[in-house]
Picture 1 (cartoon, rainbow, N blue to C red):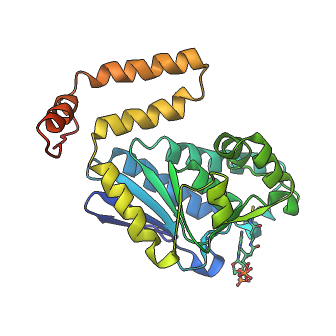
Picture 2 (cartoon, protein in one colour):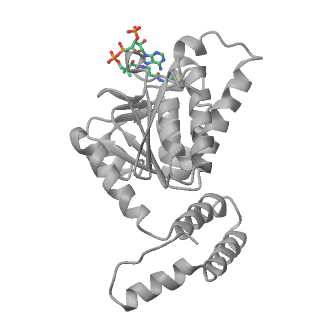
Amino acid sequence: MAYENILRDDDDGIAFVRVNRPDKLNALNDATIGELQHCFEALADDDTIKAVILTGSGEKAFVAGADIAELATQNSLSARPLAMKGQHLMNTIESTPKPVVAAVNGYAFGGGCELALACHLRFASDNAVMGLPEVTLGIIPGYGGTQRLPRIIGKGRAMEMILTAGRVDAAEAHRIGLVNKVYPQAELLAATEKTVRKMMSFGPVAVRFALDAVNHGTEMPLTDGLNYEATFFGLLASTDDLKEGMQAFLEKRPAAFKGS
Ligand code: COA
């Protein structure tokens, strides 16, 4: 599939995916959502890719939201499927069996904030501003924001951000746990790549199971989540990577994981 609204560049195991509508501050129109869906489905199955960095083109915006020009044309029959399509994309990103890190390089509002929330980690530039301003448009977040934001920053803070359409700058986003790290804009991608390459040096099966245990285990009652965790822990005991990881520690050398 040829992409018109996103770019994918692969570099030594990392896929750099860029939403590429800078003249519209990378707003998520229907076509962009479709291309991201296709892209992330392909990335999940691509064994040459070990991690994904998702960012926006230009220096101003990560993604300034769902495309308001398109939203304005919705009716009660079309809006629900639109929300389901966006949610499906966010679920696909969250379920990616390898780390997906958002490099939030500017505005991340509405659907852009929801896109970042679906990623496993969020690193932000110091000029980033994030928020869910949907109520100012007479709608609510529809791509998972009402569900993922409280799970990440807690119900009280999420309720405040959603009900007051509050915008948080990078420092505040970091303080409340909405982003993991903040870097000067010029350093954001390099710093994100450095952390991603560090994750790629660890046991790939362990990283995949850790993603799964956190993503799915936290949706279960605690006893079931703990059981889920123990099952993965047991499965990892049968991998060569476990033997290699322990052996490398004892021999005081870096581990050479094979992902098996
Ligand atoms: N949907 C569609 N187009 C958008 C957009 C969105 N979410 N956000 C920005 N754009 C477009 C603008 O319409 C403008 O297009 P134009 O040049 O053809 O008129 C272009 O991107 C630049 O935006 P502009 O508003 O001129 O930039 P700014 O620097 O003055 O303001 C923002 C930046 C992000 C504060 C402002 O664009 C904004 O508030 N956007 C909407 C944010 C939002 O409510 N998102 C949630 C949607 S559910």
